[in-house]
Length: 340
Image 1 (cartoon, rainbow, N blue to C red):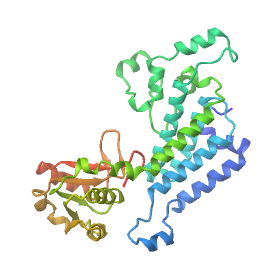
Image 2: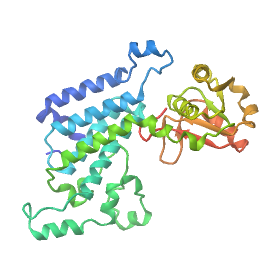
Image 3: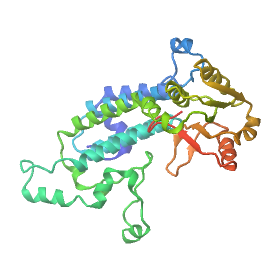
Image 4: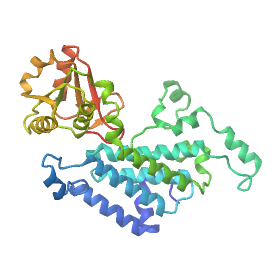
């Protein structure tokens, strides 16, 4: 029986060798950088494409997790959570720590499992007596509800003092929760859980496909006619956002910092100018001089941390400090799971 995320690999080897082979193949591609490499055909169409397509990483991660959930024999939600946490550890050690999208996908699916379990129907009398059913309903305390939405959970000092034997919960893939810490609904057999999780994964995949569209729909809320917008380097998210604003017949100017030493800003400026947007390319050293004329700054992000910090391209900190000195608002454009 699977109860420990650290035992996922031996469990797959014993019960699901074919799924373990798929996982090994995925990890090898991740280690060698082949998982998200842009094909030569797409690179020929657009030479400015990054060598890593982060949306491809997210899609491939969703596919492997969907395969594991659908083709393995787990019985309770607790076993499914242990499986997902174990897979998260495997991917993290295989190089997933370099790509935050992988960890985000795993956490998002675990959160979907928790939410489905806590919002699911009570145990039927056919599966247990009425006392068991009533007890399962009463177990839905505030703590149990917070398990469905772990990002809302904040550990409290008094709780640690009152219950020193309990482990503090964490959202990290590298740490897991003891089986005794899970609410009782996680140990009840749920035949309908697999189908519900699969539907949640399909909905999640749809959100990934509409990533840029959902961001672009807000373009007119942030960019107005006659404004001067500054951005740094090249980002497909920022680029599509600016082009979406131009499609609304808004006349604005974009100032692009060249982003040395790769000079990705030159590619960004050329792409925007070819699209008909008034564009100005400046060296990074002129950023502070231009900031006084700028209305707002648009920046991409590789990942957003829990404390509000950003993992962004090198040089963005200098842009933010310059904007802060001149009281210019900074807007970060990134998806819920995949950024940059």
